[in-house]
Amino acid sequence: MRIELQGVSKGRQLALPETSLVYGDGEARLALAETEQRPTVLGLIASGRMRPDTGRVLIDGAEDNAAIRRRVALVDAPEVCDPNPSVSVYGVVAEELMFAGRGANPLAARTWLSQVGMSDLSRVPIADVSPAERLRLLLELTVLREGVEALVLVSPDRHGGDPVVWWELAEEFSHRGYGVLVIAGAASGSVLDGRARRADDADETSEAAR
Image (cartoon, rainbow, N blue to C red):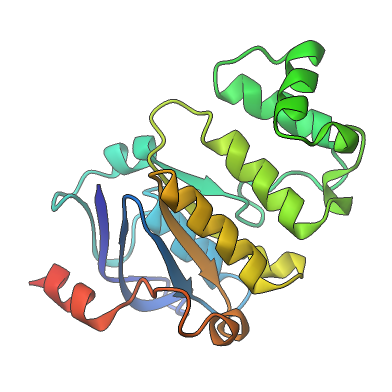
């Protein structure tokens, strides 16, 4: 699967300026977006959940937002799909198991947490979980959903911590066969320069636009 954003933009006040990028199966890519709003807007467009005002979003060369929404999951986008900070890890797990069509009872949630080695976090509010553990938890829960082939992770840098840690996590999921697009700020991009492949790679985006 290959997702292409070709010259997309949103909003008269430039909620998102014209942007082109590519991401897809088995690879982690980094996209940079500054300001409070732009990362979420870009994530919504890249995952087929918001239509751009200009440009096109393609999946395997075709415009099909419904297919993108089925196959691409949006992860931890502020004010869209991030967990309520006061909810316990157990509560987050129970809800996500329900979305994945699995048992959402206490035993199922405890069993799943034990399987991923996070039993000790069960009663901890998600806001108090370390950045690395939070992101792993949310990514592992997301890939339980049927049909998910790619992940769009929004602003992991807002939680603090070393960008290298969450980039390694993105690479881990890409090695498991998922396409991973991480949207972060320029400071994280500087830290990951030379390590993280950019989603706006000039050669690929120009080829995609042809």
